[in-house]
Amino acid sequence: MTDLKALDRDRIRTLFDLRTGSNAWSGGDFIDDPHPIWRRLRERAPVHEGTLHRLTGYPGEALFHGLPYPESPHFTVFSLEACEGIYRDPELFASSPNAGDPRHSGVESSMLMMGGAEHRRYRGLVQPSFVPSKVRWWMTNWIEETVQLLIDGFVDDGRAELNVDLCAAIPVLTITGSFGVPVEQALDIREALRDPQQVEALIAPIVAARREAPEDDLISVLVEAEYVDDDGVTHRLTDAEIHTFAYLLLAAGSGTTWKQMGITLATLLNRPELLARIRDDRDLVRAAIEESTRWEPTDPMFSRWVTRDVDLHGVHVPKGSVVHIAIGAANRDPARWDDPDDFDVDRPLKPSLAFGSGPHVCLGMHVARAEMTTALNALLDRLPNLRLDPDAEPPQVIGLYERGAMDIPVMWG
Image (cartoon, rainbow, N blue to C red; front, side, top):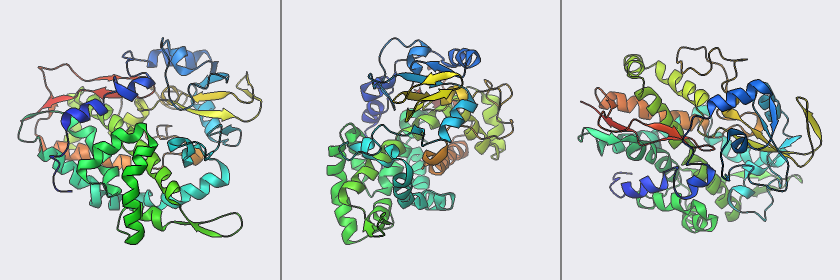
């Protein structure tokens, strides 16, 4: 990767706008702060009947993990204790109603929707590429160069809009770069996520090339991965299985980190004294990122499917129900954090549900942290007196099931 001029900023703005396109389906037009409502619901009871968006007062329909499933009863869980209990029992609270049914495509047939031994087997094929010891591999091959080249593109301008110029571009270029996708095709891949078959068409030539001559990238890892089935027979992944892996990693890798990075930057820029502290004490970078993921997780809800009747904190939940884990509410539970609605980088570090928990804990969480850490340090290193542009509207976090900061106008010097 040597030239990012192929990136179309207007196209990035369109693809990474929560208010338009496919992003709007998840409640991208929601502009209120949902946390006071979630706090009241959590204080009233740990479990409520209904979907999170209806309980929040969102008037329209919203599609996300576990939605719509109109034929199923829906319940939403708000307390940390109740949410952690669901994550700890994947047999009772399954990750999918179809458990990786091959008749489904894209994410619906991926390991995200698998359970039990099948999930462990497939996750084990890629997990070694995402453990903390492999972060340097990601940093050296893709993250550091991507961040520096992006900043090169606007460092002399004195002004930038960081959501488009930086936050949205880093994750998509990192994950597509790890697949061997050239820069000029990176946005094609992102746009093709609406149709798994389009992603397959773009990835298939790379898979074929790596089967002939593996390289030091993620597609080569998938091509060379082996697993042993229940009969003790060793297999390599089929092209279809690799395409499914690729689709999931692209969808996750180019989405959540973008939004969380924007939330982190917007939060710090709105607190200039705190940003100055972090500029002088880089040990606070990690604390700021961990606090951001706790305080405002970009995807504040995920769902599970109930495999048998259960009494859930005094609420009868029948088999076949969809239970929505309100991570955004659980991460502000005063049972674990003092003054949980405050953004406080000095609070003692305690585990949150920002990256999930249990067998399906976020595979890419260490890479996401590395991307955000690299970006924040680089901005502070290269943009003196980084601050919000006083002539522009300050950034605002919007969205319901996908929350992010749109338009982060800054200046420096």
